[in-house]
Image 1: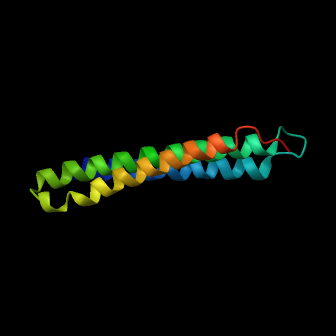
Image 2 (image 1 turned 90 degrees about the vertical axis):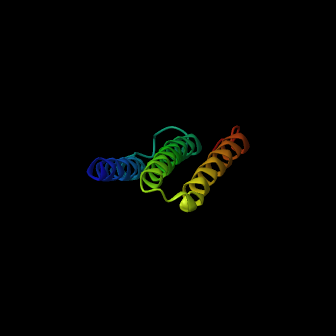
Length: 105
């Protein structure tokens, strides 16, 4: 079971790194004649923050499973704080998207 959890952790981290790399490579390889820079940045930030939130929630759930199997109920405040942090990150993303909805270059 520990090997499965470790494999899932590695896969989730690799997914987040791939998403960040895809956003960065698209940013540097795009031409100047492309669409509005603000909409491009909004799309990249939304994809990356969404991926990070998914990774954080999966990591918290894996930690909850691991702590429940090891009977370490006193350490459950770590995954709960990760869940609160990811929810705050989603709220901040929503505020960012709301505040930048009408910006043009």
